[in-house]
Image (cartoon, rainbow, N blue to C red; front, side):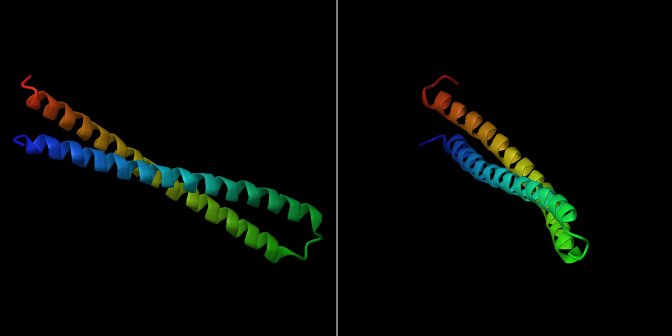
Length: 110
């Protein structure tokens, strides 16, 4: 095996693309959970405001806190999704370049 650099670049690209895919999937799952948390809390806050006569301020406060945590989780999921997509794109480019050069060198095209 005389073209170790290209082979290694292809393997590293595949590993980076796999890790990027996992990170991207995690970010998308976080986004889904945060959206659920936000929609649940907005509906719950509105329902509690309409149904109570004003003595359940702690329940409304906890629901508003849940809503702010959902917003924070949505922001974190955006960052995780972007990082995962970048890893995936860079890994795919490395894998394509590495494997293409390796195959061309092995078959004597270059």
